Image (cartoon, rainbow, N blue to C red; front, side, top):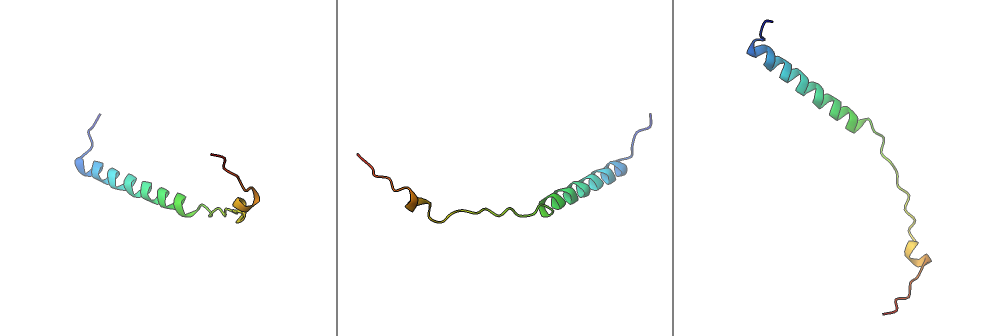
Length: 52
């Protein structure tokens, strides 16, 4: 089986590195942001009396 030249390994490394970066960037930006609805009066609904 013939061996690969060092330049071919470098080309493969650069190609897969660029493809990995593109996939990571696409996964980061294609996800829609999730809106979290937090009620503002949570603490006033359940007042706790602390008995020490």
